[in-house]
Each structure stands twice: as C-alpha cells, then as structure tokens.
Amino acid sequence: MSKHVIVGSGPVGRHTARLLVQAGHEVVLVSRSGRGPEIAGARRVAVDAADRAALGSVTAGAAALYNCANPPHYGNWEQVWPALSAGLLGAAEQTGATLVTTSSLYGYGPVDVPMTEALPDVATEKNGRIRAEMWATAKAAHEAGRARVVEVRASDYAGAGLADNSHLYRNVPAALAGRRAMVVGDPDLPHSWTDVLDVARTLVAVAERPETWGRVWLAPTNAPRTHRQALADVLAAGGHPMVPMSGYPKPVLAALALANADMRQLRAMRYVFTRPYVVDSTAAETELGLAPTPWDEVCRRTLFEPAQPTGRE
Image (cartoon, rainbow, N blue to C red; front, side, top):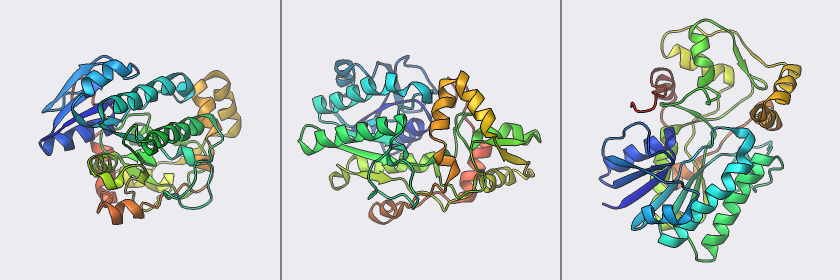
C-alpha cells in the first residue's frame, strides 16, 4: 500500500480516488474547503494547492500527486492555473512524488488529423497556450531531474458524475423534457468523447510505472460519434427519443461573448466544434493494456449517473 494525494474533487478525481482505494492505497483528497462528496476509504483535507509548502506537507511520503483540478470558468484560466500548476510541480519537486496531471487536448490547437501523442503543442489561443506551457514546464523539470511527471490527456467527457459543464451532458435534462438541443458549432462532425472513468484508469496506470513518465498519454477513447449521434445514443440508453439539435447561430455566440468571459473563450476555441475532433488512443491501448469502456455502457452511465449535490455520492 502506498500513499496517493489527489487535488481536485470533480468526476476524474473522484473516480481516481475510488480506484486507488479499491487497490488498497491510502488516499488523500485535497481541496481549498476540504469538503466534497464522501469517498469511502479516502480522507479529505483543506489545503490551497497553490501553496507549495502546504501541499508539500500533505504530499510528504506519497508515491504520486494527481492534478485533477478543473477550474470551473474557461475565461479566467490565466488567473488560476499559473499559481496552481506551480504549487503542484513545486510540491512534487519537494517530496519526490510523481506528478500525474489530467489535461485536455487544447495544447495541440486546431488539427486536421486524428490526435496522437506525437503531435506538437502549437495552440495559439489563450487556454491552449496555458495548457501547453504547463506541460512544457513540467517536462523540463522532469528532464532536469528535479521532478517525475507524466500527463494524461482526454477529449470531451462522457460517463458518470458529469454536470452541466459537460458538452455532452448539458443537453440531457432539456432533451429529456423534449426540448431542442443547442450546441456550439456543427453537430454533425466526428467528435471523440472520453469516459471520465477511463481517464482515471489511465492516471492510475501510469502513476507508479517509471517507463511511462516524462511523456503524454491519450486516455483510451471510443470511436468518434457526432454530437447528434452521441446525444441520441445517451437518450436511447433510457428508451428516450432524440430531439431536434442545432448549432447556435454565429450572431448569438457573438452577443453572448460580449457579456461573458467564458463564452468569449469558448468562441475562441470553437475550432473544437467546427472541424473533426478525433482521438487516436492506440498508444495507451497497446502499451498500457487499457481499452475504452464500451460505448453503450458509457451512454448508460452518462444518463443515469449524473453528478450528485456536494456531500453526497
């Protein structure tokens, strides 16, 4: 049994905690408030992860430190991530725990081919640059021998424990009521959806395997489905019919972006939804022996196991 520290109380952090507890490890869940859904066998502590010394104290003796944080607002990442990522990397350097980071595909920027680990990070918009810089800094520390790091990237989330910040799940409540589903971009382009459980499985798989460190891994991901197909599949898991779906008109997005920083950033990243956005997770499947959760099960859990209010599982 070894000690594992998880920063972030979203669905990836919770799934990771459960997997580690099931494997017999000591699990510490870190958040500013110390509150969140109870995970049997894990303990929660209140720590600001941007505070390197405080996080290092909690992480002392740990085999791995997991960055599962996910700032809730797209529009202010430049105010949140620099201090938070510095605190996490600093704690990893201080304690020797392997820093295992959950990340997105944003660092790659717009691409016209299926995404693999071999693609360079060439994002030009703000949030993509932030994510790319975080990985470049961590990798430099790894190569200099100051830290052990590894990063797991995933596409838009599906699966259990999602809330309305999921591009797939956010339309489910309205669709169940028979209302039209509205999406950013083209709903009929191929798009990859990664199960949050499969992200957690990949984090756990690389945490204590030295041969996986110092590189990026793409979590196992099912064959792409268009946004329309994916929502139809989720609804069909409960015997519900598909509803009409359309993209927001460009003038509407422009108007929303004027008043809301999150919408401005989402508009800047609309390439995610206006061209095919496809993951090739062959490396994780062949080298780590992982496979994506079957799509029908992903859809069932997306529909029937949404996020619970804070304090409940």
